[in-house]
Length: 399
Image (cartoon, rainbow, N blue to C red; front, side):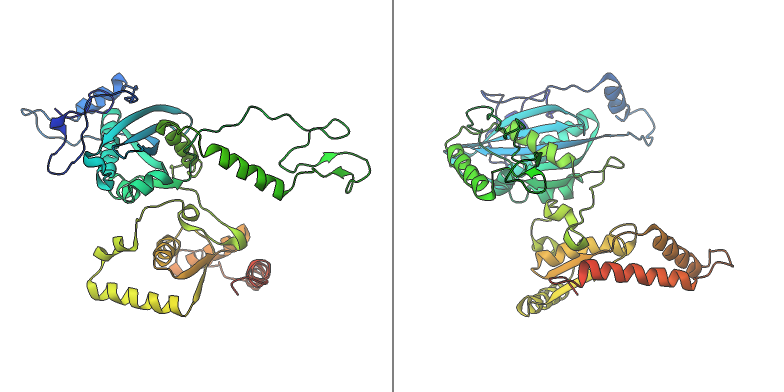
């Protein structure tokens, strides 16, 4: 009997004995199944795609609801099982969760089996509820247990995985701290917000909070020491924290990952490294012939040994073929250990209109009277000069 997540538990017959070494039984203590059920309309749409032996085959289309998922795991102290927590998020609220225990024979965790279980559970939920998971927040602890889970989420399910460091233990704080007040009765905020006060020892009419980086660091160290013996957070709570973080990295239109632009207008592909769609550089080996692969490794080694720095400059980080390829190129260069960075200028709508007009002129689709004027050339030069002097020619810049 095929398993449907949230409706029927795993049985021995559901697991291929040749591929699985897991001992998965019915729901045991500490486990939770998905509680949500597909709506009647979803069931009708799902069943409408089932082919009847006496009916002529027809092409049916189904629209899927975009969703996000959080994935976390807690390995037992004796390594006999791992607690896998999954949290479903609709980009507004967390709507469902599950906790399952995957048991390992001989107390030997299996990274491939962990990834397989996560993939199959997501597949079951997607088919039953007619949803398409767009992104996944994965805890770094789970990636330690199963290093290939992120790559499989991308390759097999077309899910963009983001890795986050999520607290795995509960906080052991005594309670809500008492607010500190200044001489005028205003609260002193640890965020560094200055409080209006005209008194001695002030700077430009504002009182400086007495806290400093050393005291903050000391407090953090004390907190970490206290939390070392704290109880472990349930896997579903960690998964929920991860998926809420992941949702913030996607735009509201089209559910595409947001661009990340850092210091000196440096483009940071893959959300500054949080998105992990490739596990290792070896994932690229099968995409080319062996001589090509060897050549790539050879020249990458030379660049590393000579400590060569490579800088790319583009007008925009998106919208064209060059930008699309640049994201992938920076990704593979970083995996090869090559020091490569990508920079863009601050956007200028007036300049972009000029470049668009130039493109149309070269393509022969612009108005015959449209030409590049000297004023537009000067504006373009001023734009490039300004960005170079502000971001790239200063000390420590790429130029």
